[in-house]
Structure formats: structure tokens, C-alpha cells
Length: 381
Ligand SMILES: [Zn+2]
Ligand SMILES: [Zn+2]
Image (cartoon, rainbow, N blue to C red; front, top):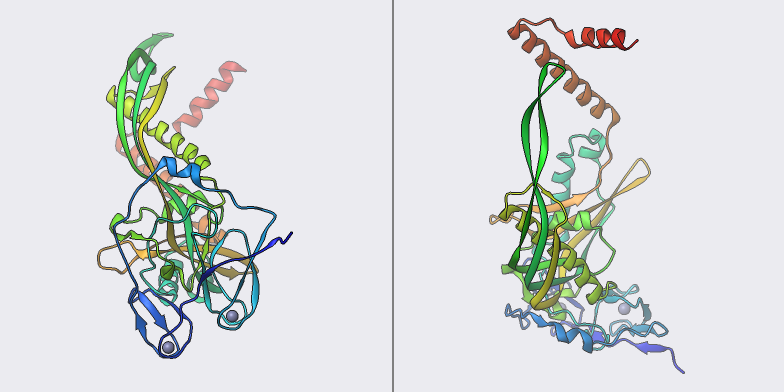
């Protein structure tokens, strides 16, 4: 039995000089770095939602099989990780994009193409480092990322219309004045009341990460991705980047989406009644419509070394403003102990200053409460 399967894929060649083509973020076309030619390819923005029933038809990958691809440019054969959708030949750097219909997995429906090059991403990172006010100045002004690579993050997105029946108790915070030991106190209490009814909600594009290469925290910081930038999936957009296929099963991902929908349904019910807290609220939800898409989102991944430690950064591959000057960035930077200490001390000084000023205006003795605490101790002791 042969455990090796040759992965079929795409390697686009320049019609003029035969060199490998890669996607050029500036022009949105395929580009030959050797003879500087640009080539158009079929592009469409008619992105469709897919019916949920589609999910049962996909076959899962056979773990026992090893995929490899043979580079059409240099002839080298390279073993491909099970989840690889796009990569480069390690010997000649020719882009290789796997044939998404031959992977046996759910094929991507859409993606957002990179809008700028890695050079622009590096410029964005330089500006980002300068804005890290708590980072050591050397990191802010004199470090440079070790490398920067365009990566497509696989993402499930779900749409749903839900109908929920709910019943139980909700609470509102109220205040009341009570007299205790001859003194008046204001206290907060919760007023509980019963509710029941139904609510219909519409959810559009709930993103759930389809692998673990980026944390939820960072991934959320790069959002939202503008819907007007969605295009129909085509392998040319991936040429020259790294793209990984999903490792989170779509049905598992939908359970994550469901939890998020439940949280939003509950908060919608609470705001309907102006409630502050949930008591025994039971919510039974059914999806009356649901659809999904499998998308690839563009992210530049970089890391900066400082004092022997690596700090990862993620730059969204698309601009976040209409003027096309800014991109969202999430990531880690070192923290200067002295800067944090100075800020904390300045904060304490400001609080004490305001306190003394208030005492002065009110004509009260500063630090009067310390004396009161003493008196209480005397009473107890
Ligand atoms: Zn060429
Ligand atoms: Zn090669």
C-alpha cells in the first residue's frame, strides 16, 4: 500500500520568461519579479453563503497518508504538512498552491486579498513600536522585526436566524435607605421579577478561527474585516503566501458560534427588560436558517527580538481606514519596569494631590479617616 499521495496544485508561470508568478498586493494581479510583467486572472466578488447540508458531504483527511508535491520549477519533491494549502518550494522559493478540490476537505469559498506588500507592513510595525509608550525606548526606536510573512488565517463564518423561547427570572439593581444603629445607610439590592416570551434574532458573519496559529485575543483585535473586500476564492490570490487549511472541524466551530449567539440572545433579552442581572433565565434556541462560509483572511506575521526574547506581532493585511494609511496591529512588546513604576508613582501623587485639594476646599482635616480607623481599633480592642 502506498502511503504517499502527490498533492496536485498550481504553480503559475510567466508567459514571457517562464519564471514563477506570485500575487502582487499593490496591483491585485499576478506578477513576475523577473521581467516585471503583470497578468490578470478571473476575479469575482459574488461570494455565496453555503447551505449547512454541504458540511456532511466532505470527507475527512486520511491521517496515514503523507502528501508531497513536486516543484514544476526545479523538480524538487517536498513533503507537505497535512494542513498546508499554500507554501513556497524550499529550494527555489516558487509559490505552490494546493488544488483545493483535491484535498478532500471543505474547499474555501472566499477570501480577502492582501492590500499591501510586506514592505508597507514593516512600515506599519515601525510606527506601532513607536506608539508602545510603556516599552523600553531602545525597543521603540531601534529594533526591527526579524522577518515578516504574509499568512492566510483560515476562518469559518456563520450566519443564522434564531428563534428562542425564554422563561425565568431577571433582576434590576435598586438602592434603598435604611437606618441601622441610629445611622442612615444607602444600600443596593436586587429586585427580581419573572419573564417569559420569545425573541427572534439575525446573526451575520460570526467568525470562528479554524486553526490555532493565532490566539482569539489577537484575532479579535484585527477585526472587523470589511465585507466589501470579500472575493470569491481563487488559488492565484494565495501565490507567494503561506496558507494553512483548517484543523478545527466546521461542526465544532459552529458550537463555538452557538455559544456566542446564546450570549448575545441573553443580553438582548436583558436589555428588553432593562435588567442588570440574570437569575434563573432559561433560553431554548432553534436556528430557523443557517449557512456558512469558509474564508481565508490576510495577516502579516512578524516577530521582534529584544534582549534574547521574541515578541510576536500580527498586522492585518488590509487597511482599516478609507484613506488607506492604517492597518490594525495586535501583538506583544516588552514592558519597561521603570516607566511603569514612574507612572504608578505619578498616579499616586495625583490622587493624594486631589484628596488634599478636596480637604482644603471642604475645610476638613486631611487623613481624618486614619484617626477614625484608630478610634475603631480602640473600640474593638
Ligand atoms: Zn517574466
Ligand atoms: Zn522549486
